[in-house]
Length: 435
Ligand code: URA
Image (cartoon, rainbow, N blue to C red; front, side):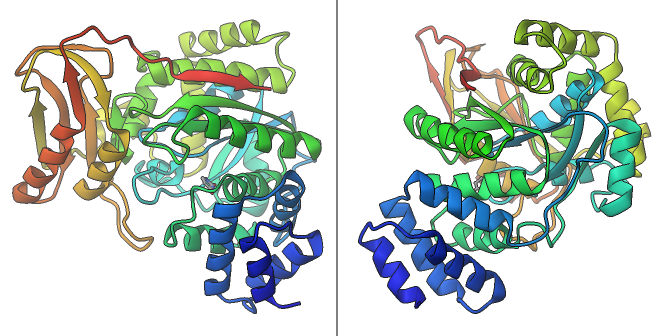
């Protein structure tokens, strides 16, 4: 078999057999098939697609390209949640402790941010001391002791995705439904949980730009997961504006702490309550989602979700003083307000531009080796549907960069807010649940 023939076959829109996909994935992981041939194959898949059987085969072969975790000896029903990426998405930090406070078990492997999207690991590392390198016995013990761990993916888990995702990121091949489905599901399946909730984001800050694409991706992933005996469900969520008010690592952790204390922004809480209720139902901890929602509301009210987060930070060597007193987090040297130039209603906030600007302020990475400034980012003061008067603050830029650099970025940020005279309804955060 020759890789070039497989690339041509896919370029012509033909179907690849399991043996052919195995030849590609196995050869790629072993370094026999070079990056340039995998790039060409990814591009052919992006244009020609894959049928369901091909995606299932690709997922399965990627899942087994390295080690897989066996969590069957751990206590409780293990649930996991995965977002396809967004701006200001700190959901895992809030939702994780909430569902665990209600009796579920969360053994979660998370990733880092790249480009305009943030990553849970970077956010957690803005807590001084927090250790994401938890593996093996310590990982298992922590899950059994407190029911929750959020750690970094080890090198040996799904190496095919690690190599391929980095390549797709620089070859314009991220936005392919079969490739995203196989990437997400291979990782979730290898991580060994019983139930999976997928948050498929859609909008200009997400990889899926419209609801039809997002629905197709979500249904495909749900089918793959259920086909492999994991209760898999999905929510489609709005990423046409950032989630919550905070974008940037420490700013988002502070927002997550506030949310766990019952002072979270409406859209973030709605996503946590709705998504959390689905997870509790998957874990068979409630009779239906309405009861699950009540349990989640109660764990915020009685402080048990907040306490669970403190327990996790402590177990992973983080300094809990920062959680108990979030004002201790380092604040950026420059905080620059952006003012509205006209009165009316906020019609749209360009989530992609806000994510990119936060990255340029120091809050994200352009390449994997960049060092993040944990205090940098953007705090929104207004969301879509809010009334605004001319001269009121739209948002604040937080950065340690020179004022000249910040001033340049502020022009792009100002342009990302669209204001209209007409009334604008607040958008829904959850657009659909697929189960
Ligand atoms: N998230 C992933 O894990 N993989 C993708 O391909 C896209 C989003």
